[in-house]
Length: 251
Image (cartoon, rainbow, N blue to C red; front, side, top):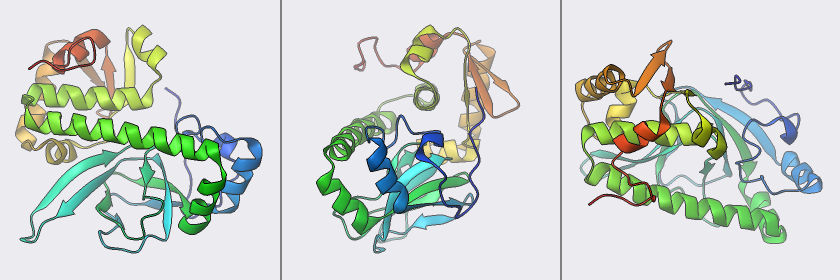
């Protein structure tokens, strides 16, 4: 797997053509002139792991895409309890055009680089650019599917199925469908720590470690340098998720 280009904090973008997420981001369908318009309103910023990117209730001055890293979406209840409600992975969109205030806390789980667009100019461009609106609609529908998958993941799956499902989600985001279907040794970077995985999945750290070790022992996965996962048989990992072959779920 090719290394992801590193982007220094607050560095002005050189070209959208060099972006590692260009084929999956909100600007994926934009033509050259439209990309130039986006470049005029964008900037990069990097957040350290544990740093707050957005707090619920904040006025949204920007929207943007995750270029590298992983961020968490969470909500704090009145009694102070905090519930993680999702993850933002590379190419996921941060913020909502037309929404002035943030609905959730967004925190960098790992070091995160955002491609940020000034919100009001982006909203104006969205009104005038059908390709951008089409891509935003697709991403909104994908996010709805992800939310439903999240409900199933937390509500009905076993610990082993939760770990396998998370690994499969990350693998899909870092590889094309063709790569996944044809791979005999699928590789991807597991940027989340085991502590973050436990928090995300509602498991203990000990359970996460035990299940990962069990998947390794059973030959489903192997680890290289702690952060790189190798899947020798994608279908076997899919079977471990508890999802059926038609994309639905066992009941």
